[in-house]
Amino acid sequence: MAQNRYKAIVAGQTYTIIGQESKQHMDMVTALVNEQLNEIMSLSPGITQEKATMLLAINAVSDQLKKQEALMKLEKQQNTLEGQAAHNLELENRIKKIEAIEAEAKEIMRKNGKENVPIRNHVEAQQIVNENRKREIQKRAANK
Image 1 (cartoon, helix red, strand yellow):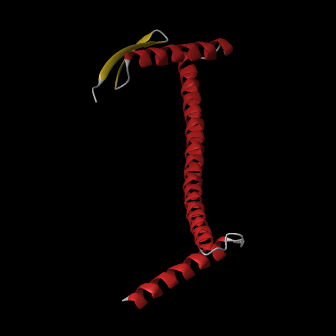
Image 2: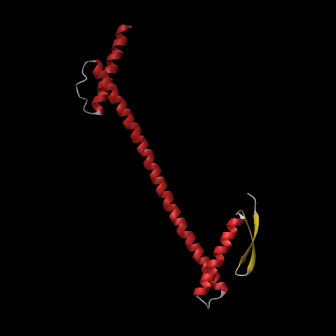
Image 3: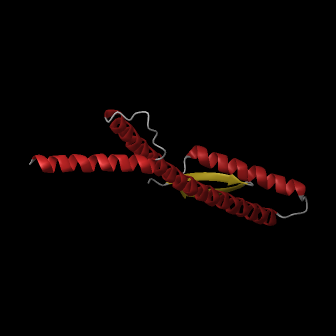
């Protein structure tokens, strides 16, 4: 990426900053630094500019660490949610397969004139489907 040169004025001092950020971004950074520096100096009138600058740096690093911790927590939550979503998708696919087997079993029962016989669960439905397939295979083998 292109490197940009930016002249920042902080507490009356001019600094040349080289980086990839836009001028608008650096304008906001410079304004915020000056605002926070002025706030520190107004809260502690006897503090030197050097000490105020150090406090500002400490506050900035503290804020950065808090934001990094929050980001890591959010990333962990995102990973958990993605895992749950994948698990939910897997369960949905299983349910669709079970529903398809149950529908096939009901159709088999209907063709055999037993549509009024209840299918109690998916295991029973699978057994009906398996038995029907077994009979079909046996019929084909007998017809050869």
